[in-house]
Length: 407
Image (tube, rainbow, N blue to C red; front, side, top):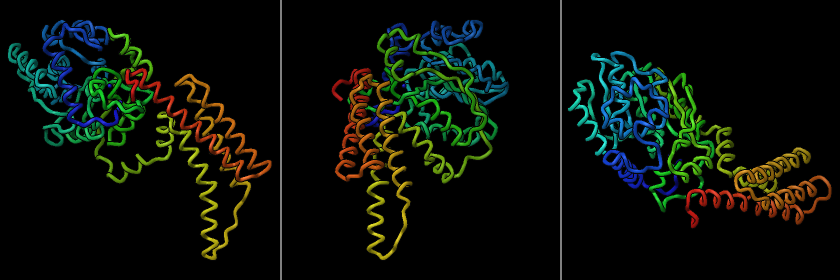
């Protein structure tokens, strides 16, 4: 439930189908996530709603929250339930929508759709249609849906941006969305391609919370709001899963939003994604800000020298404020050291901080006290070794937590 490097879409889909086939066929088995009626109660489903659900549906529930808190489904709605599973939320939505409404229950796993279709036939839910399909390619017409509900599905989708775009497409302007999904605060940076089961067995598939909200806003959704935040993984029967979730600060969010009148043009979405502030936040979260700051310092230092030399060859004279130049180099060097020191919160080892502070100090000495290119280069080498060491330790710690010691 974190974007993993190296997975093919087919591997992810296969892992998801295998896991949720087991939930559909053998719901009493032990899973790493909470399943069934007890999970419903723990996540806040009202007892009166649960009492009206067929037992087979309750038994295979595998959601991560109670999305109906957002109250996106109204009487008479055409509702799309993405990742409907055995149909817990689809049935609740059908009762809210009433006889004038209709629910399209979509799921990727054939075993889940068969189980839901059987329950629909046996219980006479005449306003529920069951479809097998992917959130990345919704088999519905543009603007054909009044509201969307989804519970624990987006974290299992490889191309989340495309899934969000598809949700926008099938909703009519002003259409409403309610979501419960897993998010993280610290992204996974190690390559987990050697074990695709991690996609569905750990915190491997979820998005950073802020990035998920931004993704919806970029696509044209409005009034995107967090209804509730909950510690979903505290209910996991697996100690390892609880530890992994804690390592990445994983939890569930319940969200509500509505579709805006128009999707922003592609170039506007692209400009938003290229926002430097977003890139800085991303590099900080992923532990790359130290190395990025070091590269910036090197570019300002030696890139400026190279540019001045080239301009001189071309006969172009350019005055440079030495104080401002040195200040910019020092700023990036200090930022690199600070980012490396901050890494101790992740790997709890002070080693990289020593060469980072020493390297930054040497660079400042060369810049402001007694300049020597050899001394300055030595400072940069120390800072580079510290930044690389910090990244290696961060990755090693994540590999240990995920059980990927060899990556």
